[in-house]
Length: 192
Image 1: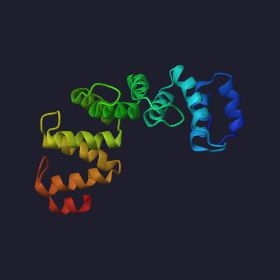
Image 2: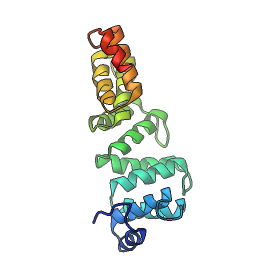
Image 3: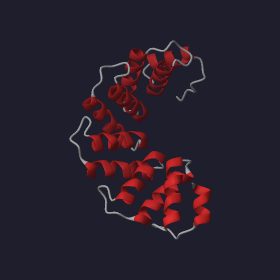
């Protein structure tokens, strides 16, 4: 069953107590935000973990975020990465992006730029806007990947179309300089 957050939290709690992984996730998110209930980060983590253990990727990602920040639980980068990996392997773009960041920073894992870029590509290909922009930066700067202005422009365009202002500025710079795209000062002004 799918429950809207705006529904009565008691109904969500009842379904969560019956083991419904979506309701467990929804209850955890209500508790994290204080929407419809008193905010309780520790209780939120308990429900997110129940949902995550049943394999719900959204809960796995959120649990990873809590572990990474120490929100409602003892901060633990290694455990956060473990949950990000579970969600990322199910195709969760947000978890793929966070996993990429962990590999870039060596947070909870051995620092590995190549692995980071692979997860970044996975997230970007699914439309994760920040991943698209970051991948564009990698191609523009030649970070881990071979410098490729056309590929950078491709990813900047995708992120810009999704409203990312940094990508819009980067695309504008490419248009002004004619890097990876035909120089066009008029279009550059529209994107910048």
